[in-house]
Image (cartoon, rainbow, N blue to C red; front, side, top):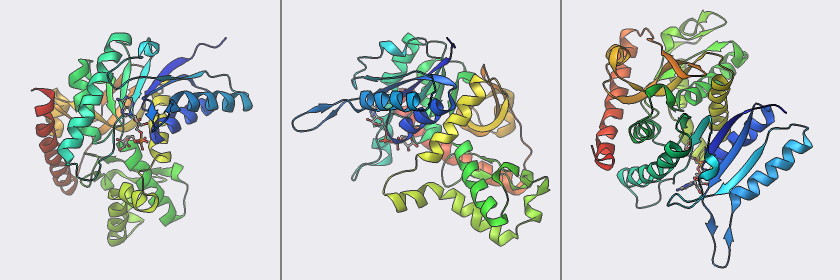
Length: 330
Ligand code: APR
């Protein structure tokens, strides 16, 4: 029997369940899903078990022998025993902002949820690599880094791969080329102030700025910045296909030790932090992903205009980090 790495996913909502099904369809890993029960007036549902059973039958139908199981956990942290010995733990658990809730309230709620999950991961899978998806992702990645005590190479936030995929989609449509031949990185905080690295972006080796007029490029960048919002406006809920695919891209790089360069939110300090002007928090930069997690932080050259955008982006992440520190007790 093939020994596959184990990817546990905590939070089997829209993003988590799509991560699971994409991973299973690739037959790369075994998957364990964790989520809380759903209580209605007269019944307690366990959707995570139902989803896992459905996926088990999906892989059987497709002649894939990756394993999948679902486990109901309590918000207080009961039921996490099966997360034991996971190689990677993907965290999407959390709640979206509800009417009347401030950003700070949301942050406090999601940091509390994260804290319970991390304490269980530390206990049962102390060597796992964490991939944080819950928003605001740079802040939640920082919180996961602080709460886990894991080394910085094993705590990775998903944002840049998604933002870059969105940017590539719009460029591909504009130029009528395959997204495969587009190299375009989006770095910085995952928010309105993300930084597209135009000076480095190219299509089949030709600089992007030579292919798309400046004004039009600006429109594509704006569409990328508000790419998440555009989907929320259409669907009434946040995106999940592309976010899930971005997580899968990262997981694949880790489990195949492919050493791909992908933009991810990571804890920056030391020499790389100095290069990026970040001391002790998480922001998106290109990194090399292999079996040890983040194997290298790439110091990407930026032209003056990009540097300025970068500094604005970092400043806005830093402000939110200061708010989060209150909940992290530091
Ligand atoms: N323990 C485990 N799971 C939890 C807990 C908890 N304490 N609290 C909430 N969850 C689960 C919810 O039950 C839900 O199934 O987290 C899941 C979140 O899924 P969705 O609400 O469907 O959200 P989704 O669209 O998947 O987004 C997840 O990713 O992209 C980000 O902004 C997005 O922060 C959000 C996250």
